Image (cartoon, rainbow, N blue to C red; front, side, top):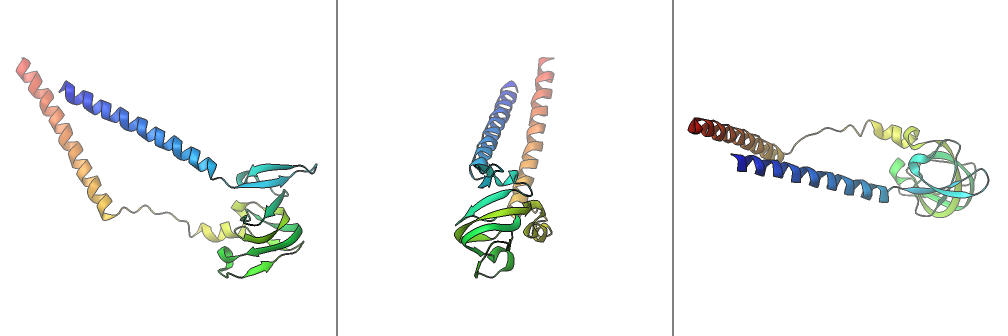
Length: 174
């Protein structure tokens, strides 16, 4: 009985350590894949920030390959073309000039530009459109249901075995 308790405890400790290690590794990977943009500060200097740090009225520099992180108006542009396929479904490329509105989710296919942020991503047009689509429902597959049932009954059987071994040990030693 003591051996069984030691093995079970060791298994739980090892599982917890592995889970925490995996969680920390995923957090580090997530930080590596965080989108970065260039903010133009009020003094004219540039700084790299994550898209989560963008605030209304910020000026951000956008270049080819970037995905526009928020809704806003172009302050300046040079050959600035965007693909709005994620928003409209059209794969056409549109030339945008200063004072044109651009929307979060558009992808820059050529040129460079400076965007004055009007709405952060959470308030943007695409975020409002996708809010209702993002409703998450947790549905297990038949295989996952079967595995959960097996694990549940093995757990019950293990508890009964531990109880049996404990009671038997007490009765034999009396």
